[in-house]
Structure formats: structure tokens, C-alpha cells
Image (cartoon, rainbow, N blue to C red; front, top):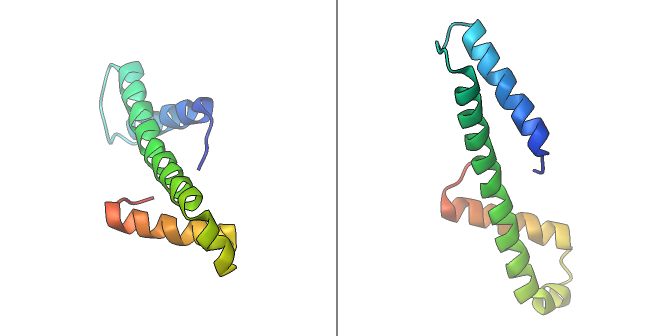
Length: 92
């Protein structure tokens, strides 16, 4: 899932504002908390990017076999990605 850095920053800001408004957190360092939330969100999104890159590597490595098997690119991509997610115990 590709999100712009600006959207992630905006989302982090809204999350922090709502947490404060609902008295779920209390802080005088709103900017620092927002920055940390944004960093965590970007790190989590990077996990999916890393997995997608691994899938592309597998697809390139076994492209001839996939082509001969007559399996669609999207179908094989989803299967390989699902397997990597299970193997690496990641939640997407």
C-alpha cells in the first residue's frame, strides 16, 4: 500500500489529536509525539514494501516456470506474498 509521506504525516497528526481529545494520552510535546507516530507508521508501511520487493525477486527468478504454468502474474504475486507474510509472521 503506497501512501504519500504527506498523507502519513497528516494521519499521524490526526491520530495524536484524537488521542489527546479523548484523553487517552496526555502530553505537552505534541509535535514530538506526532513525529514518533509518523515514524512508526512509515516503518510499518516499509515492511509491506520490503515484502513486495521480495515477491518481485521471486517472480523474476522463476518467471519462466510461472509463464509455462500459465498462472496469471497477479494470482502468483498474491500467493507468494501470502506465503512470505505467513513465513515472516507479519500482519499487513
